[in-house]
Length: 478
Image (cartoon, rainbow, N blue to C red; front, side):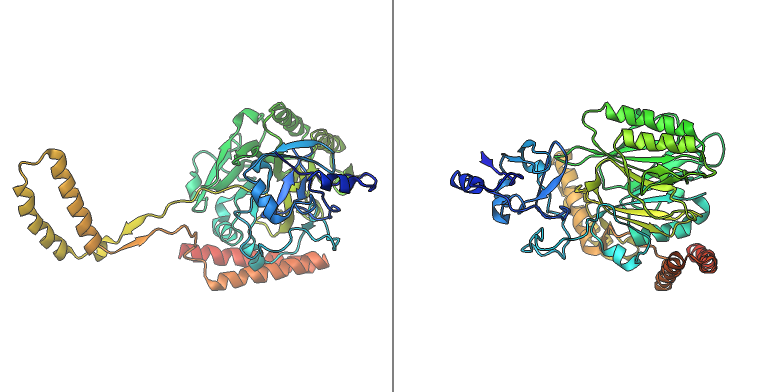
């Protein structure tokens, strides 16, 4: 068994020399950078922290050899001894194609900013499309059915893997195919008492996701489990708390989290949604004094997040000056970046890139025959000629006759019927270049309004957004 140790914070003395004489790899000083998806790293089973392989004194070649073995190492943060295998090593198979494989995963000479808590309101559509991250979108709709064109364009541009939708205003008479973009599956919890509220969780069809109704309580909350090969699954939750003084939903959320807490195999949680709690300062994790919103509900929500180790990652306003749409996690290393972007209602949306190494099942391509372009005369001629040979095979068994007929049909069709292969690309036929330019113009107006915080700039942005929505609706209809 190969043993890999980090340098612990002990006095230098001759400790390194003793380890080196014993054949143990000695780590260098820990860097301040996170282990990103696609980089070589080790995960501690106890504190769930990741450490670069080079911080552990393991060069890239040695690390690659250890992937197929079992070995022990000591975490420099909690000093726990880990018995690790390849499932605790970071997966490089889906790393960004622009990354240089010979480049060091960590830079000890630079003190880079920790990106775990980065939350921004400025974004760029073109840059977002090129990112190679697992992506989730948290969005408040206030009726999805009258915003379908803009909704489809948004998904087409952002390409999220998961979508946490709140205030969907759906009911069982509406089929998910009426509003869901191609390539996605939706799990819904509609509000049955009236035509408001409701949540859904949508995900790409190539992801291993299942709903966990056993963890849900009697409020507008959903839990879905993402299975990751060789690692513990991750729970993704969607919640909608309708009012600022709704303590009942907070109590039921706490009960749901307690159910999760009792499941030994479930550790990592990503909870998103609209919490409608404007009187919490998430930078200090405290309630805002002299606020008109309910202090009791705010205190309960803070107590619940702290009791279950949930950290709030959205640090920008999502409606007016209030942060209502939240991203709560109990493992900060899951979060790469959080962006507040233009939404589809009076709430902004929240886009989160996550460090989740899940392997997507690839949809096999299908051969599609273009029947209207078939050479019918050739087909008739060849099948007429084949009929004589088929009738002459009267002594053959039924199975042999069928095999003979089937092989001839396939041969004729392949020769005289043009075909094409199915594509996994999800293009919108009505979304043209001019619409992409309008997306960028909307982005510029949004960024300008966020920067200036001027009511006049916000009014210009809202007016443009309404015009943009009408243009998309017209393009989709025509």
